Every structure is written in C-alpha cells, then in structure tokens.
Amino acid sequence: MKNEGKEPLTLYADLWKDESVQKSYYIFFGIIVAVMVVLGAAFDWAETPDEFDELAVVPSPTFPLPLPTQIMRQDLGEFNKSGANGWVEIRNLDGKTSIDISMDGLKDEHLHIHDGEEEGHPTALHTGSCKKLGPVKNQLTPIDEGGETILDMSVEEFGKMLPLSLVIREAMDNPRIVSCTDIASL
Image (cartoon, rainbow, N blue to C red; front, side, top):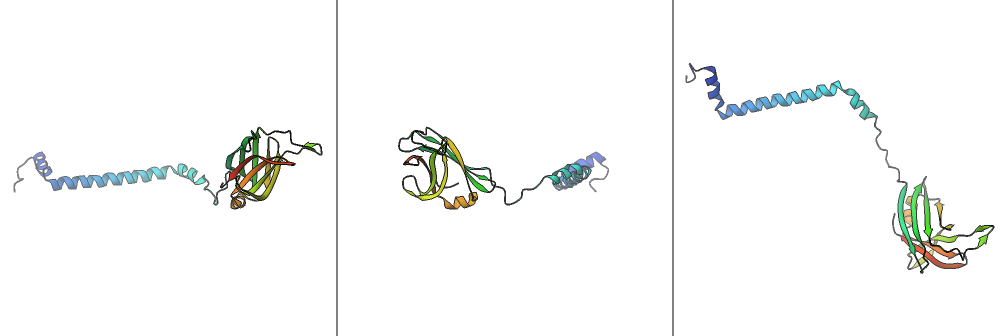
C-alpha cells in the first residue's frame, strides 16, 4: 500500500489533497453547524416563553375596520366676486355624516334678524355642479362664519349620492351664490 509507513500527519495531508474528501468534510461540518443552530434556536425559544406570551396578548384587528374620523376636507372658493372663501370637512360622526364648514369674507349686510337671531347664509347640497346646479338635495344649517350639519345617514350612504355641489348663498331673500364647491368623491 502506498500509505504504509507514513506519519499520520503526512497521511492526512495526502488525503486532504483529494477534492472529494474536502467536499465531504465541508458537507459534514455544514450539517453539524446547521443542526446546532436549529437546536440552539429551539432551546432558546423554549427557555423564553414569556416573550411569546406577550405577543399573544396583542389584539388582532376586527373586520370591517372602523371608518376614519376625517373623510374629506376641501376648499370652498369665492363665487361671483364675493370675497368669501373657506373649507368644508365631511366626516363620519358616530355613524352619521357631519358636514362642517368654515368661511371667511362673508358679508353680513344682507342677513336679517329672525326671532332675535341672525338668519345666517343659506347653505345647501345640490345635484349637479357649480357651473350647472341641479335641485337641492339637502338643506344644511345656515352659516355665519361657519357651522356644522349632521345628516342622518352614514358616510357610505352620503357617498352614493355624489357628485353634489355645496352652495352658500348671500341671504334668504338674496339667492346670489357667494361660495360653491363640487364634491365628486370622498
């Protein structure tokens, strides 16, 4: 035999030169390392159950997810050179639709006092667009510098009525439009 009489180190050095021996060695020790990693992770996991118990306490979301509080905010622009501008916010409020309006530049000279209170500027939702208004769909609370109307319908029901236009008029006896915006979608 060609390995007889050789020192053990020389014998191993000769064996190591064979590529198939090297591949077997790497595969063998690779498997040992992989088994040790898996077992180490398993033992580490088994020793720390408290961390995983805390994860189980986290509530999962319920479906359907609740609607966000604010749905849409849109600018209200000047109409007929009125100088009025502001914004409208349409949002879910306990299952109903809140339409909140804030305005600047509204002139109060055409407003009348009725039962000791100022009437406010008539506000309504119309079908159609600001350029081509249709009939009134919902009369809203008249506003001075702002106001909120709660519609007895969900935001989903309101969304099915769109497109609409929000129209603010000068006064009850003066139907001139001072501000208008198209609401195409939420």
